[in-house]
Length: 607
Image (cartoon, rainbow, N blue to C red; front, side, top):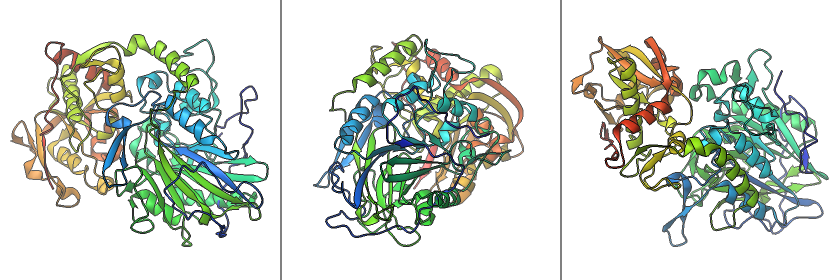
């Protein structure tokens, strides 16, 4: 049976929530493009979106506040993960510290003031790959925070499946963790908001795992939401996390449920899509539509937007952690807003949807939207501070423990990153305690979630690495796995970084000390890895020889499109990868001799 959210009469629910039970499909009918006197043109970037102009009569402005990819970042994220870049009127840029649930709550509450018709929605990855304050408790703290934020609805993201479908159902429905039990004297209540998973089906029943859509209603205004995650989720989540599930095409699913919503009389529809794009500018407030409709964004979401039914009025997206507010024409040629609010709670999007009471549809010519910074120059929300303090108190005995010392920032940024090299070295060192014949280690770049910063995050002192900081870097609880590959397989695995499913968006593995090669980005496909340049401790890889390779369990399962890494022999499963990093830092650093950032010079890049 699909996991669904039960009614929770004991909880405070916002009066504008109406849950429509269905396993249905949605597609909004011909969208009215009524010209509204004095309305903003579609794609307008300016303005707070707080002074909604149509409140009575035929038209009613509905405020849609949205964000995505929070990843359990309740406390302000550090380093580059806690900053956004703002384009100034004179063409220069300004960096702004951003994020933190205490500030996000304040910004959202301020934005809602004066807007009686306001909805808050999210685009997935609210949990998963979370810092210790949330991840240590299986993300119960984040669900509690989202309840306090008055989140109305969210799609699932790929990270909602990190711990499998049963754990996702627990986050929705409540109950204590089946292994770790209850963390406080109160039973975990679950999410007050529905998770939507229209394109995630139970393999046996072929029915949606969770509700496919949800309808918000206030008086005579109705807006439907369809939630999907990227079809390729099984390629980027551990096999155990998606066991027994099928992920269907995003466009086909949205169009299917749009039709069902229309049959139920819901003509205003928003798709929450955990898939994203790549903007033309790194500045959160750049004018995406300046060169022409849709020219300012590329990637999967651009193709999805061009094919989703015209009956859908707006797309809230995510996954790529980028910021954009773009107009991409629907299949009928009508303008349609596509938004993403970066990640980690650094931004939120404020969109005005003008509802036409006569047609029950959104007047597209009146849609406007803008991203806003979750700046830290506003008062902290006291209820969020209390929540963070509660969970930090529980986490402190574990999280505050010092495990190493560094002499400077060890960042995760770059094609080859210093932190990626450090983690690969740590896994190689750990693997050699299990098998001294281990030759090398490979680390997937997506598994490195945050940089290690020299500046203290608490009272530990500068240069001290705490367990909590290491947990934020590697929160997935993967194991370190050893496998034997032929040299030919090893070469093939390296070529899979830039070919097959990774050709359009390469995933460059982080490599342990001793493995070197040239990556020629002037070439295409697998040829970008220069075969003759691959060396291990200075010697060419012998295609017929055997090599013992350490990876995490995600890669050992063929994750991220590295099918060859799922075909090794003589498997040996070790302890979790975080323990490997902890042991390496403890063994190789001290207060008097801190670890220096690796040079990140193992891969020679030709551009």
